[in-house]
Image (tube, rainbow, N blue to C red; front, side):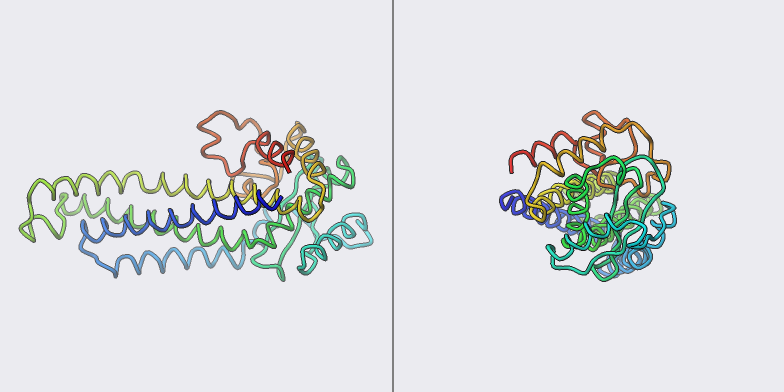
Length: 299
């Protein structure tokens, strides 16, 4: 368990560092091609952070409303509350609020910007179809997302992806508006072969940057799922419980009607069925269930 947790933390950190290096490279080309300098980067960061902050502080309310989730009391679901409170003590964080989606498809997610505002939401189908050790595994996974500040990390990643998208868009607009003339080149008298190559590289980078940013963002999301699995197994000290829950949830054929593409990444198992193949795995927010179960079985 410790090995899995350590490995996934390092991989997540490496992806974030790589993402930052990619942004610095794009920023250099942005300054070289457009001449906007640091002011352009600052503007892109401010816009991206403003957009992310709005989502960060209201995301839990929006997600719960979209998912048609309702708060529940301890009297209504004492079984769920006991599991949540016990695992919160084990995790060393305040007990999250409990919400339920009235849907027979088994699934669950966590939301909230920190442990004080956290929510764990499960479907009624999850409560009906999973036994206690399986439910503990699922809740521990979601508790780990809260404890590991995954919502906060994803917000940072969204800001970086937003910066990339804005810089890329402005670079392309600059190319079209100026006919490919950069501040260097003709204005600086540097119209040699090297300058032409840099112009072409900058154009290609501007075109592909949003694609690469999305790939890195999704890769980070998949690593955090592996980390939540490992951390959840550490909380329960029983990896087979979560492995069994993942099997049941993924094998269930009932669609989760409240889920959509905007919220699918939050759930413990992607509720949108029919995702497969190498290309789709690359663009998936979740690792393949088989790989997650195999990692749990090695613990």
